[in-house]
Length: 323
Image (tube, rainbow, N blue to C red; front, side):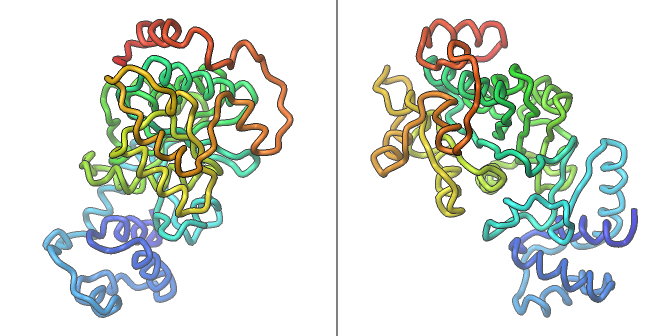
């Protein structure tokens, strides 16, 4: 790897430095072609503020070289915001990752992505609707992006992949590991589909809980529109919804998320989004209509309301998913 690539990894490794500050460093080091600015004292001078807990800076160049070797061994690629191949929609948000790591192939610009998110413990109707909407998107050649979590994320990925579309997942850890481990087969299917696993975190980064709210801005940032299927009031899906609104992207909720059901399934988050004005989506065709696409599809195959409980239970049994 060349110096520019090592610099990208070093900047991605910096803790306590905001994305916009990392971008300033990328531009400065690129201009100066000088590693010295990446010393703690020089970073503090450049940012005009003190940085805390920087003992990990010791040997950071050597750490970056080791990470570069891991990237080569694990087929992990990365792109910085200085590169023309950086996803243009993501570059439009106010705090895009300065460096983006990925396995597979990043989504192209020809067709929009639909971000789908929701609870890890959906109702059978919600799981069914996530699967069927994502499948309908895939049947028309459109891809879904989600977070590889259990529940709504997993059902969305599976529906889209079962229809033959390339899949995309954004992770809250380094790409040398798959989290949750129970979705390793699903992650492989995403790579085999021609899609990608994506992260702003360097290989070796563990799935710390504070990583996941930040990764949600990437899910919504890569998509033209975000669909929240079912979500409690306090949830990662609601955070994704807030990011979508901040990014001036479409925000919709699925009909199952606003329909009353068993008290066991908490839908208060999606219900509140609908009350606040989020439009309701029933089928994949609703997405196509909102995007202005005329798409031919199999109405029976994407109908999300028929036999929901029975179909979701069957899918969960066949795919070994706990609902």
